[in-house]
Amino acid sequence: MIPYLLVLALGLAALLQVSLLPALQIGGVYPNLPLVIVVAWALLRGARSAVIWALIAGLWLDLLSSRSFGGYTLGLVAAAYLAGLGAQTVYRPTIPFALAMVAVATIVQDGIQMALLWLSGGTFSLPDALLRLVLPEIAYNFVMMLAVFPLLSWVNRVTGQERLPLE
Amino acid sequence: MLQRPRTRRRIRWWPIVIVLLVATVVLLNTRSVDAPRDVTARITLSLQRLLRQAGNELRGAIGIVGDSTTLRDRNAELEQAVAQLTVENLRLKEIEAENVRLRGLLQFRDVNPSFTYKGGQVVGRIVANEPTSIIQSILIDIGSNNGIEPGMPVVTERGLVGRVTDVYGNAARVLLIIDSSSNVNTMLQNTRLRGILRGRAGQLPIMDYLPQDQSILVGDIVVTSGEGGNFPVGIPVGQVVEVEQNDVEMFQRAVVRTTVDFDTLETVLVVTNFVSSSEQFGPPQDREDPQNPADLPGAP
Image (tube, rainbow over all chains, first blue to last red; front, side, top):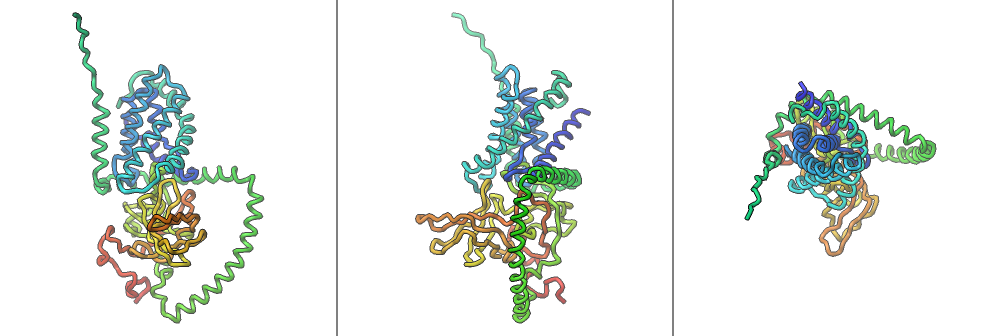
C-alpha cells in the first residue's frame, strides 16, 4: 500500500508544481517543490532512498511537461545524489544545512535544464539566467524548504529509521 | 614486510546506471512519449484545473492584501488614464468607421484578417506550466476534441501569446513567444521594418536582424509580419523598450516588452481557422487556403 501512496504523493507534488505554483510566480519565477522534497529526504534518509524518490517525481514531471522525456528525471536524480553525498558530511542535518543543500541542488537541476535547452538550440545568456531565474528560484526554494524539512523530519520520525518500501 | 590487507572498494553503480538510462531516454524523440503524455493529461486535467483555480484565487487574495496600500494612488492614476483613453477611443472609432468605408470600397472584406478569424476562436483556460521557469510553455484545457491542431496561433485580447505545439484529446500545449526556442516573424508597425522576435530565458525577448541603417525608436510598436505563414499579419506583440546598436555588427536589435502579461495569464484564445503554412506542421497543400475567399467562413 505504502509504495502506491508514495507514487501518488510524489505525483501530487508534481501536479502542484505545474498547476498551482506557477500561478504564484513572481517575475516569472516559481519554486520547485519536487526538488525541495527530494533534497530534504536525501538529508534525512540518504542518497539511495532520495534517488528513488527523485526517479518517481522526475517521471511524473516528465509526463506533465512537453520537452525531451527524461530531462527532469535526470536533473532530480543528480540533485538527490549530490544532496545525499552532502548529508554524509554532517552528523545531523540542520535547517541551515538543508538551505545550503537546496541552493546547490537548484543550481544543479537548473544547470542541467539549461544545458538541455542549449543542446536543443535554445538561446539564453548564462549570467542573466543565473541572476534572474536561478537566484530568485533559490530564494523561493528556501521558503519552501522551511516548510518541507520539518514536515519530512516528522515523517522520518513517525516511520522510524526502518526503511520504507521502495527504499 | 607486512602488507596492508587489500580492501575491495564498493562501487556504487546504481546512480550511474539510472543517470545513463535517463540520459538515453532524454535523447529519444519527444514524439515517442506523446501517448503516455496524452493519457496523463486525460487523467489529471480535472485535478490540474482545480489546482490552477486554487492558485489563481490564492494569487488574487495575496494581491488584494498587497495592493490595498496603493489602491488610492492607483485609482487617481486610473481615472486620469480613463479620461485620456476616452478621447483616444473616440478618435479610434472615427478611424474605424473610415476604415470600414474604405474596405468596402476596395472590396477587402474577404481577406481582412479580423473578419477571417472572428468566430473561429476557442477559449482555453491555462491549467499548467512547465515544471521550471526556464522553459516557457503552457497547457490549456482544450484539445483535439475541440478542433485544436498543432500550429494554430494563440492570442489574448492584448496580443500574441504563442503557438500550439502538441495536441492531446482534451488538452494542448502552447509554446509561448517568450520561450528561448521561439522565433516569430515580426515588424515595426510604423516603419514596417522586419525582424525576428526571439525569446530569451530570464530576459525580455529581442527583435533581431534589424538593418543597421534604419532608425528604431523606444516605444515603437511590434506586430506580427505574417511572413513564414505561422501567424496572421498585424497581431500586437509588444513595444520596443531598448535598442541595442553596435557599429561592428551587421544588424541592430531591439528589446521588446510584450503586450501580454505572462505572469498573470489565465485564459487564451486559439485561432482555429488560421492555417499555418509552416512545414513543421504538415504540407500547406493538405489544408485550406486562407487567402482563397471560397475557403473563408461564411463563404458560399
